[in-house]
Structure formats: structure tokens, C-alpha cells
Image 1 (cartoon, rainbow, N blue to C red):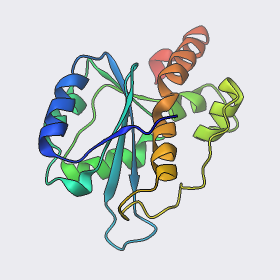
Image 2 (image 1 turned 135 degrees about the vertical axis):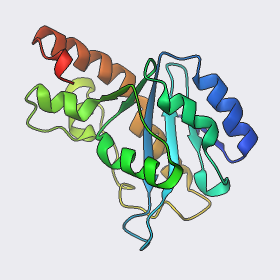
Image 3 (image 1 turned 90 degrees about the horizontal axis):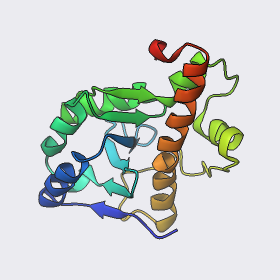
Amino acid sequence: MSLPTILTTAGEIADFAAELAGFDSIAVDLEADSLHNYQEKVCLLQFTTPQTTTLIDPLAVSTLDPLKPIFANSSQRKIFHAADYDIRCLARDFNLGIRGLFDTMISCQFLGEERFGLADVLKKYFNVDLDKRYQKADWSIRPLSPEMICYAAEDTRYLHDLAQLLEQKLSDKGRLTWV
């Protein structure tokens, strides 16, 4: 797998936000440094569209304001896995509110899955072994290693397919409106 692009300038983020506006759904995740710094912060954002994965380094820019319309657009689906922490962090650090959320972890819970961590769910449905060794890494350190970049990209890589599969399962059980 080639490394995804990491955006580090306000101009790149503005251009990327305009590109994201053209998609019906985007998969989103973030990495923070809560285990390593007293004042935690978002250190990396991951976005996967149906076409590509792109990362944003929020430590390199002063604002993520160009992304506000994307996150606020309720007609565009934002796919997260276990969104609660991410939502709080995005609101705290960047005043970003999320509308149009589809949380794959909550979907798994409403389907009665016994194990609903991302690694467990991807293993069950796609036979993917997600490497979680960087889950507790210090994401504030720069430069990020190629292994950390790959790890981050994998967290959103399968979310579109997973959301589609879970949506069908929820629909089959009459529970889609619950999530």
C-alpha cells in the first residue's frame, strides 16, 4: 500500500474540503495524544472517500474551518467507528459539529454483535487483520513514521464497505431507523 497524502497547509485543506463536498459519504477517524500529554489534542485526521484516503495534520495549521461545512452537512454521510470520543475532540479543538453521522460501532451494537471493536468487526466480516500496535502511540511526535501513517489510513479504509454491509443487516432486521 502506498502512503496516503498528508495535508499540512490551509490551502491544501481548503482544496480538499471542496473535493469532499462532491461525495455522498466520507469515512472519518482521528488520532489524539491523550495518553502522552496532559492537555490532549487531535493530532491527525483521516478521511476516506470511495476513491482515496487522505490525512490532515492539524498540528501544522492554525484552523480547520474549511471543513466546517462538510461536517455540518446533514445530507452527506460521515462514517465513523466509535464516534463519541472523536465528536467531543473535534468540537473541543476545532468547534466542528457533526451532522449526517453513521456510527458503525453503534450499528454493531444494535445488531447484537458480541464484539464490536473495529478490529473484531473487520476480522469477522472481511477477514482483515487490523494491526492495532499504534493505537496508543504518541501521535503528536513528528515526523510520523510510515508505519504510523499506514496504521492511520487503515482505520478508515474499510468503513464504507462496513457501513453498507451493516446498513443492509439493520434493514433486514427492521432496525435501520434506530441508528
